[in-house]
Length: 345
Ligand code: NAD
Ligand code: LMR
Image (cartoon, rainbow, N blue to C red):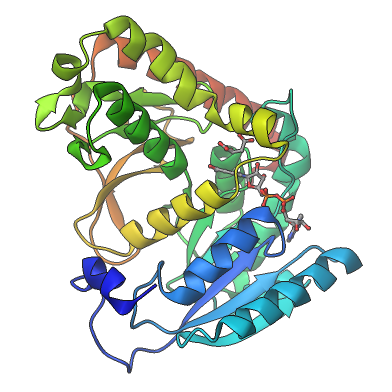
């Protein structure tokens, strides 16, 4: 990428070469998503063109994974990224999370064809107990955590529940891939450029019950339902395509989405570091939009200061979306009950 590509971010990231490096811990760094993600972080796509980074890469204590990680680090070296100041490789979370300003939790098992993401709960959920505790103990005071490993909302809740020092708002889960998917589907259906679609936000779980709330979105400045008058499509195939896109990719590729997930995570963190941005993330619901206050649900937030957000509370949703929110909320409540033994407090 040329430096000109970063002009978009120049307001958010001061143009200076003297910024201290940001420490970014990434679990599952040698996996599929890791392989697409690390190069974006090191190039400056996540934290801007003037923010040096130190990558703290964490893998499972398995020889094959650590060996693969060495290969990824060699490739990072071979890119000669000016912003990349150091690479730490470890199978010890205490080392990898130490002083991290951002922790990106990717490491976990992806689902296979025929599974739902919730089928991963018992296996993946327990990873987030120990990691939540260690992040809380050793990460930087300003640490922020983004959970990608599925089922992302509930894993994030498990990790956050372990924390005594870091408050729940520091823990977010990714629904940005769903927002990006929804935006593209609306643009294709309307036959417009992607950038004409605004304010499409995702509510609820990163699962087929997610709610792509088209009722507040616009296309070319007009409400979506005025531009796409096929309401049967909006409430049927549109919801279905976005909600089941992950499974469709697994069926086609034989492996779960990776490059688009890494791209969405880059969007998630970059927008959460950019004051004024309004975007979908899964956060502790605090009871907004009828969600159980204890679950982590996707919803629109506005970034206030780098890394911090406020929930957008004023969205008036249509009856169809409200009904769907009740369903996705119930699924999150059920997932919480299923992992009750993994939640602290
Ligand atoms: P992958 O199997 O290619 O890589 C996962 C990596 O995690 C492996 O290298 C593995 O060794 C490592 N790992 C496992 N347990 C670990 C632990 N305890 N600590 C550190 N590392 C550990 O999988 P992937 O395709 O990169 O997907 C990773 C996760 O992301 C999956 O759970 C997948 O379902 C999820 N995902 C989420 C979204 C989303 O939108 N939220 C999108 C795509 C994928
Ligand atoms: C996705 O949405 O692509 C990921 O969550 C992977 C999956 O299992 O669907």
